[in-house]
Image 1 (tube, one colour):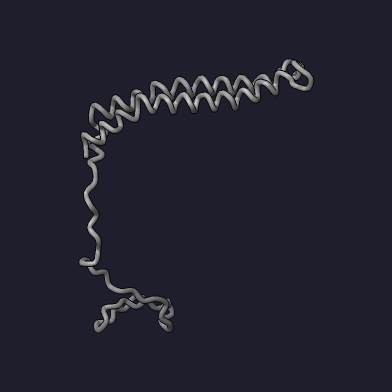
Image 2 (cartoon, rainbow, N blue to C red):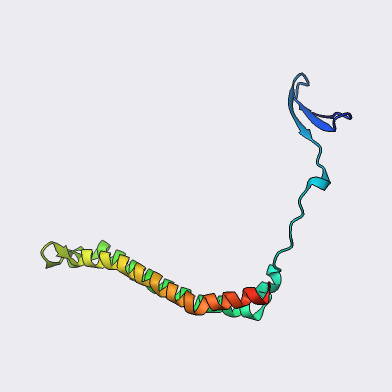
Length: 136
């Protein structure tokens, strides 16, 4: 149950039984609300030719590399699950094929990360800077 105090302008909330006050709130004053500064027109940016080219360029890199890595990872899991004898074949001392392929999973992740970083620095970042400049 809510009750407004005319003198102070506060709204008092009471418990459902009506016996005790549970909360009180000041009235909202529209003059104290901060105006949100107008930002970039994201819809216009998204519809621009430059943004479309940027997205397609990223997709041309990301999708094939993701599929390649996923296939490589899935191949490792299948080998580990169904070809245990092959994976346990010792190469040098206690180092076997499974251990080498497992470490290569981490190496390939690092290499893909570095490859994407280089790709982004050369192809994506300049286009993003141009897009920001054009729409700022």
